[in-house]
Image 1 (cartoon, rainbow, N blue to C red):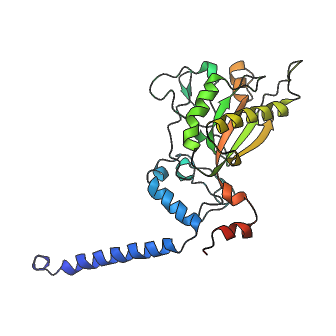
Image 2: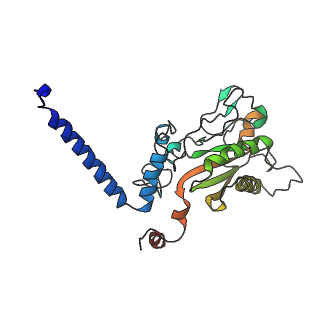
Image 3: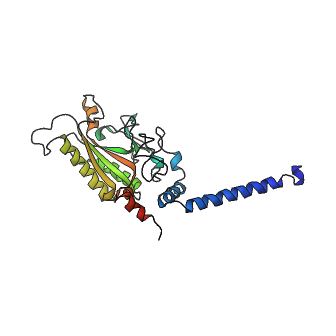
Length: 268
């Protein structure tokens, strides 16, 4: 029957249905808000990003992510996926130290970084925190009593900057310090002051690399969110750090009231 043309109508009908689906999809996109249109555009600009996101967490949510809830959450709380944040594609972290992979939450001290091979100098984005509140970002380490960026820290930030450039996601810098008392004569009043100074150093360097200041948010945890509580020197070095988070929040969504923001998307 099909050989005599009896099945030709099925092919024609399938083509018609496909064309109608495409037509209605275009009409639906045309009627959506600017945010939705941008999200669709980002998907087609980075079609592989959503498939190459972090494997250990569901997609991010928050203002500007259609159909989602609060920042970095699935429901009330959740985890972030790199590939779903404004089209930022996942980059191999390349964070290795002493032959061991660092999968969640930081890296070994820069002085101990003996990475070899093609991935050694790649920029890094990773899920920083364990538990229900993981964010996408990276970690910059400092000497225990210092807020000065080392050459290794500057190199990491310089490699990271192109991945952040051109996006409108908010970036949070969270400073940390060890629980050990500051030495006599320290220029810092306490661990909080030291954490803040570290955030400032990272902020200034990112701005020098072209990251817009309105995207950056500073926060400090001082000595109260240690990466590790082990007492050996190598482990404690991981606590002197700044964590850099790429958030599922957008600059435009945090300026003005909801009514004022809605005015920006109205057509004349």
